[in-house]
Image (cartoon, rainbow, N blue to C red):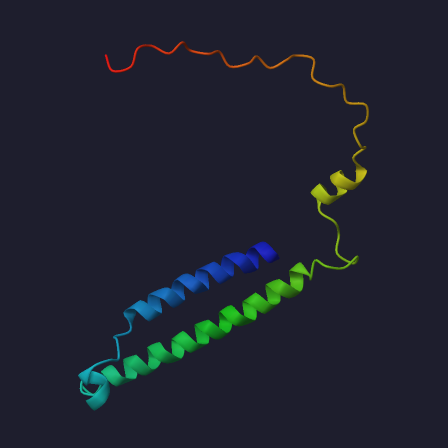
Length: 117
């Protein structure tokens, strides 16, 4: 269920990005006088895009809350432990580890040659 909700959130997010990119910027002289949004029904399109943006934001919010409720809090004993946590708890401590038998060779000295030639 969480995978389905994650995919749905991604799809709605992509749709939200597209809707925001379609909207025309509201800045400069257009915002002061409202000149560009009054011709030939463009105002209705802008209203539709704005409402669609808010609806998609709400959908992402609701889906995020749903996925959080399905995934659980992760902090209590009621949530199952992950496989890694189980492996760590069931692992036996290593005892009587022998020291390294091989010595590390010392770096060799390179004889210094005459300087300046």
